[in-house]
Image 1: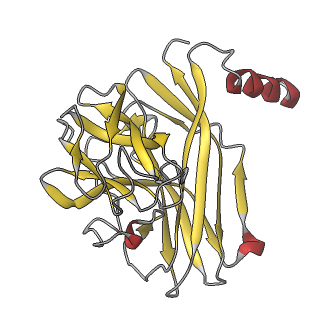
Image 2: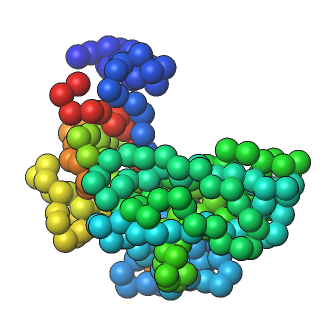
Length: 265
């Protein structure tokens, strides 16, 4: 296929004209990074109050599914408040399939999801807001029985989660097309795209393999990894962006995207 043909196909997919395929990906960022030998996932968990035990590495829920709850750090994120009133959670259930559920917030009081088989949280976004138009406080989703395990968050003054990790749904595959990363404080750091898949098979033990890396130091070295379409990730594999800072205070953002396709399409 020619370059123009490929671009036209992506345009068709983005417009919902190709059955069984859609653009898909994730993004995230992290400020005030510490030097962590095992790396820091690029999400804003270190800004939460209290800081969860999982703030460096995003935890992976039990494969049998878990009961989770959503809570805000501000009382005005509630059904009658000026902030976020309702949140939709896109998740993978215990059987590996995509699902969607909606939650009415109650400020700083946790609200349980109506389902108890959440295997992975792929995204959260607001579905109803008050006069503020966005979250007043950080909104987080955690394991009901262990509040130190926060799986995703919507940052204050935002409407959608910025957590750079996804799980490929069952009966789908994900073709990576592009990723990028940058560092904004002129502090050297290594950013890697990691995945629990190698040789087109997902690992049962959730071992993360390096599928792309770059050293960064300042915005002038922002990079885009184009043309990675040969990386095709199978169902139930997990992808994420992680950084290793060489100096305290590094600040990095990253994203990746591609095409999620139903098998057989």
